[in-house]
Length: 178
Image (cartoon, rainbow, N blue to C red):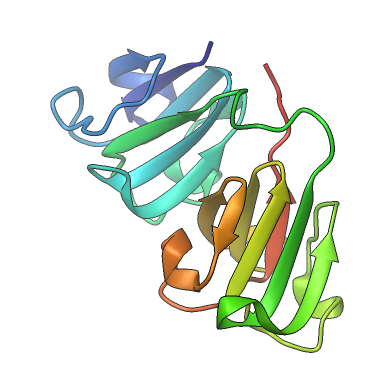
């Protein structure tokens, strides 16, 4: 079971809202979000209602201001608990491709990758196949920039994971941390 607490002000101050499951619209609970405490679970937060806009992956811990979770602003409008059913408790395996529809050069990974550019001859990922586990794509190396949550399955083009382009600088496995 997950538990996350949203605070309107920095350093866990101001109006707060506690949540333990998915919520497609948080607007009625708080006006802005400047700090978060994750007590249990892995969470994907979204800038807009209905799981849209910039995405932010948070695991257990304290985030005293929105820059701590790499936020672009203080807007959090929906959240998704990444359940242990989605998380694969064993190995992780992903194949990334330089072109749409699984074409072009392919790279298979089973571990986190802080700098994808160092492992491949291409700088974009246009499709991927997640064979095992759940992953987070980051637009910039060293787990920075826009984030995208991907669960097991096929993604024939980058728009299927919500990206505006194929820029993937790093990727990380989602490990169970309950």
